[in-house]
Length: 187
Image (cartoon, rainbow, N blue to C red; front, side, top):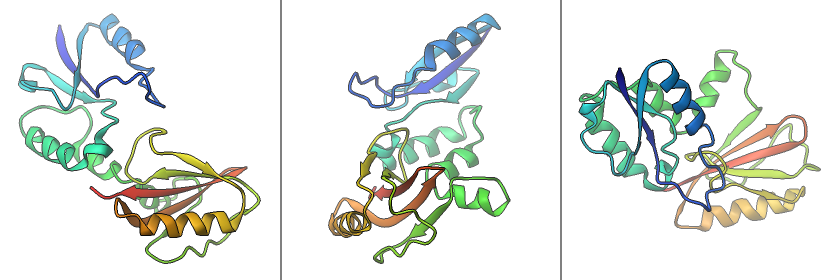
């Protein structure tokens, strides 16, 4: 029986986006002959004991980005990751979506806004906006704004002034009704 490490994070009852798939996936893998051990990535030791490591839901990586990147770099050559390491590293920052779009893969229409006051094109300002971190997972750090351009500009200026926020923004139109603006935490 193959032994898999299901890499996750510390469960938090206040988490806005828990890993609901964990029991389903573990049960499905068990049915086809895999023994699965969930491990919190921040506490995982002796990963060499597993036949493979599945990076599934280490969703607090964005709050510990430097630590996660060091952890991943350490283990990358020591264990077999089911997830291709290059893809894991590229997908940490959601700007990878722009690369997908360049290859013709449909994504939510997006614009990258750097440290300038945003001048958005093709945005319906009558819709609410959802803001999410560029580096983050699930709904962590997400919130909505009122459907007013002034609110967007005020919020953007506020974010640029905060020391803990990196001045990079992504605006996404969530079809058909809203726009998603993403900002990135400083590591």
